[in-house]
Length: 340
Image 1 (cartoon, rainbow, N blue to C red):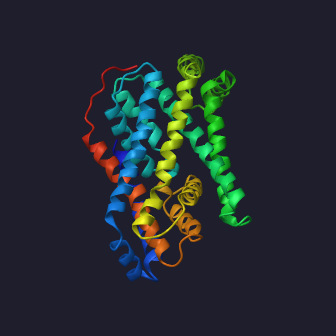
Image 2 (image 1 turned 45 degrees about the horizontal axis):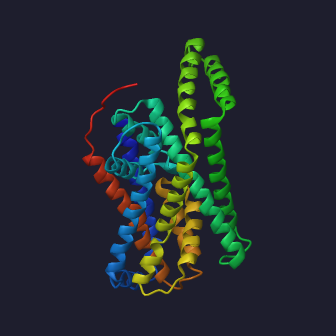
Image 3 (image 1 turned 135 degrees about the vertical axis):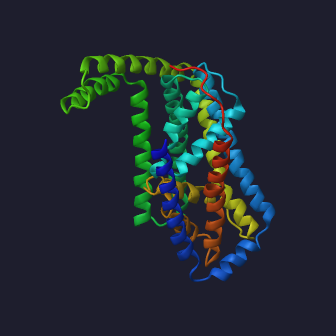
């Protein structure tokens, strides 16, 4: 536990250092104009942007609630919302958002759900989300190909394509891990043998049996998604809606700064920004996301105003989400009901 807290604190320190660098480069040339734009914005739109963040997480929590129900478990919608914000916190303080899923399994287990089933729920929820993310990414790429919002051939476009391919490969790997018995058997056989050869595992046969039993239960639970195709399609649709809601936040903030932007253009640009941010190794994609935002939105907004827009959006979409997640984490106090 102490080691985990140290890692979290270290990652927060890294975030703050990179944030300081981002603020320096964002404000160093026209800080008075940028601060004036932020202070002078219509705060009803700022509050609306915060409500958009909450709505985004609420829709995601509805999806989460039904994924839990598919697996014959009962966790309240309010608790799903709380866990959702806790996941958001750990996504935000770990590189590549890698800390969210382990903590998701941990808190589902605290709700009395077995580790095997909690792992299933986590992976199923990730698959449903990842499918939606890839679909929105495809929509953004197609829209840009038709309307040419951004240059056809540049380094940033290649980064976007790279990020899209990474997300697609992650989705394929998740499907194979959940539904392919061949992949699961390969992991059990080859993985255990390899670890036994280098001395990490002593009793190879016992470990293979234990892991085989785990994968059997895991695969059986994973098939629940296949048996609920209509519901899964609906959940993917809800996730697409939640992403579109989230990606509309810069539009609302821009309106508060008296900027006249097209909503579709803003959603496409934000989708591009988030695709780039998905493979930035710094916690929260800090640095890469800010740079991507300024790059893409500079095609719609000129001068220092784009920096003001980026800073307010980043505060609402990331730092405020982290604050909400920290509050949700501090308020969580439920004990484990049962173990596997």
